[in-house]
Amino acid sequence: MYPCKSMTMMMMYSSSWCEASLSPRAHQSRLPWKPFADVNMKKMISSSMNSPRRSTGYNGGKDEENSTSSSGSSSSSSSSGGSPSMNGMTMLTKGSGTTARGRRLLKIQEEKRKREYDRLHNYPAWAKVLEDACKNDTELRAVLGDSIGNPELMRKRVEERVRKRGRDFHKSQTGSVLAFKVNFRDFNPVGSFIWFELYGSPTDRDVDLIGSVIQSWYVMGRLGAFNSSNLQLANSSIENNPLYDADKGFKAMPSSFHDISNVEFQDNWGRVWVDLGTSDFFSIDVLLNCLTVLSSEYLGIQQVVFGGRRMGDWEEGMTSLEYGYKYFKI
Image 1 (cartoon, one colour):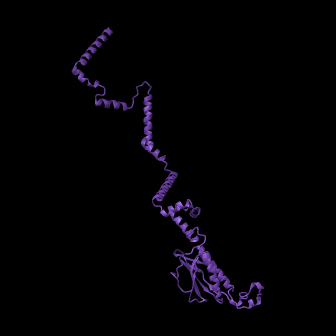
Image 2 (cartoon, rainbow, N blue to C red):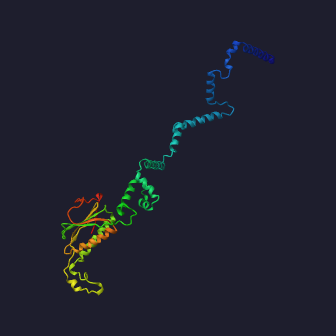
Image 3 (spheres, rainbow, N blue to C red):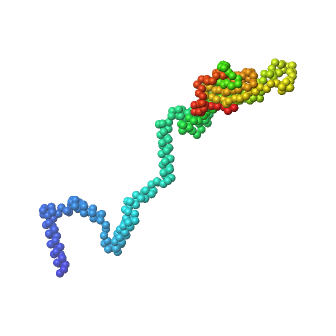
């Protein structure tokens, strides 16, 4: 009984389905059978794919547990540290290398780039010439030392070198082949200036040379070396074994220098104030003999003037080293 009834129902359903499928109106009404033909169908499919999967009961409720645990973890993450994106940003911030060491390295790199830029765009041309010259000049390289790359320090090193040894590094002899002039202008032996005119501003070496000569000359005069009343061997011949009378020399009228000032320089002029005291004038001959050899062998002297209150561009009271003032202390 039951099989016949079921067969009858199946035949009725198949016949009705065939009629509906064969009729054109029915075919048009069944447009949803075309796959993805309707936009609403696409939206439904996409929403169904994005929606969380429900538990079907086949895995014993594990899906519900997973969904519960995932929701719990998401809620705990949101309650503890905000959204996952915010936690990721925090992790990136912590691991971005903005530590104290990283900041120091960035600062060093920035300073290096700045120095390189200044060297290429704002570096003086004369400093570049000196750097190139150091490649083939060991003496100049020793003068500059660790100042290469620092124009201000390089300038100071070169100025110091020129001040000590003159403008020509390789000049072995700085004397003059010309004899200097000698002039007297109201020279008073007990209180007058002796002036020296050089060919250029003296270096520290030149100041030491002239100052040492004047100091030696003064020491000899102070000890009575320039005493014309006791010249026993001046006109004697050494070949005849001359005799020297020590008692006569001891009883001779003493003569010595009284006073002298420091040797001062302004630009290419130098001066020294002297009080010859009771010394004789041939002390001046001794000084000129010394200066003659000094000028021809070591430094050039244009003229020597005995007396006078002001020579050249000399300015009284100007004792600043920045304006070319130098001195040798006697």
